Image (cartoon, rainbow, N blue to C red; front, top):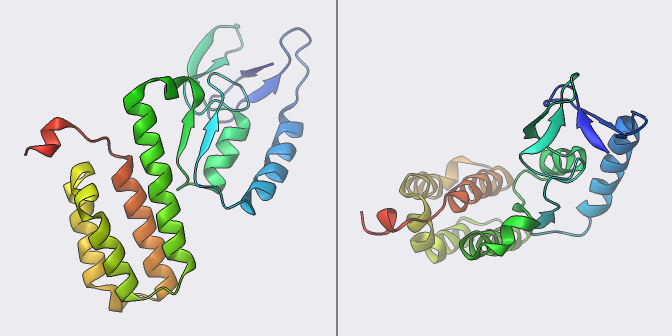
Length: 186
C-alpha cells in the first residue's frame, strides 16, 4: 500500500490494483484512538515510512507515480490530532542515543504532568511542579520557562482545569525543544 495524491489529504491505495482503502483506514484510526484513549498513554512509537504509521517524511506518490517525502501516515495523523501533547517518535530514530534519550525524557515529563493534572489542581501543586522542573525547563527553553513562570505567578486568574491545560501545553512545548551545549552555557 502507499499514499497518493495531495500530501495534506492523501489516499491510501494498493500498489498493484490501485484499490482505495482510505475510508477503511479512517474508520480504523478513529476506532483505535478511542481504544487508546482509555489506556492513559505517555508516549507512542510509530513505524518509519509506513503509509499508516509514519509520522514524517512518508512517501506520497503524485499522479505520475513519482514519490515525494512530504506525507504523514493516516493513522499517525489521526493519533497526533487526538493526542497532540503525547510524545511520539518513529522506531528508526530510536537507535540514535540522543534522540532516544530526548524521547524518553519527554515521555516521563508527559507522565508527570498527567499525574499533576489528575490530582487536585491547586496553585500550590503547580508551583511545586514548576519548581521541581525549573532547571530542566531552562535547559530546554529559557523563553518557555519564563512563560511558565508567568503563568504560575498569575495562576489565580485562571480556572484550575484551564490553568493545568495551558501549563501542560507550554510544558510539553518546552521539553520538545532539544537541549544543546550552547543553551547550557549561555
